[in-house]
Image (cartoon, rainbow, N blue to C red; front, side, top):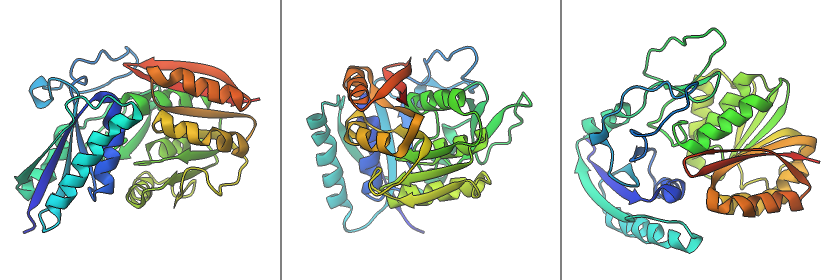
Length: 313
């Protein structure tokens, strides 16, 4: 039986997405997220249909990311690389918090059950509910839309504030029949939500081949293959529009790299919905949007995260 190593990265909240990406690039197929803020989070009355959480399962500060790799001769080199890259995140003006990396050997049976401890059906917007594939769940209202994801495969299950903010913004914008592009699709949650809300087509893009495969699997699980096309791509390089809606839930520094491309592929009047932006970076993003002829339609907040909806003039 294969033996596994558990790599634990204790990181600050604003560096969570970047650290998770480092673990995926190191070969992890999934990341367990233990967020110190989750047990104490005050969910809005209309959202947050979530099971009671045990505070003892979560760190006292920041976020602990746990990834699993098979034990092997190159593990030490991999851990050394992860440690160096996590420390290097300070160069991007990210607060890495403790910034520690530790390794433990785990029993495969513990690894298989680790995911299920933390993920329960959660309402993230007025109609959108995300649930793990193994949970039996009957939505309480006839108009509810349930997205099934396997959080053992990729991050982006919806419980992170930046993901939830995009879903809430997307739900307001979709009228039906739109063409959508999702840049940095991760687990595919935004693409699947767009399809289930009634858009005509979605192009899901990610530079990471693991994310591309995970998105394809989740699209199949949700029966959205007819609407969602998935492919490996670096941001919007080589992508042609026109699209009615562009989505991006990635770091502000990355969003700033392709504001012009987003404007290029969107129709006049099209919407650009983005998050993964911390409040300290909000002004940089809005200034770049306005410089590329976008009008800010709405900005919403949760914890220290921001989602911006902009419309191409």
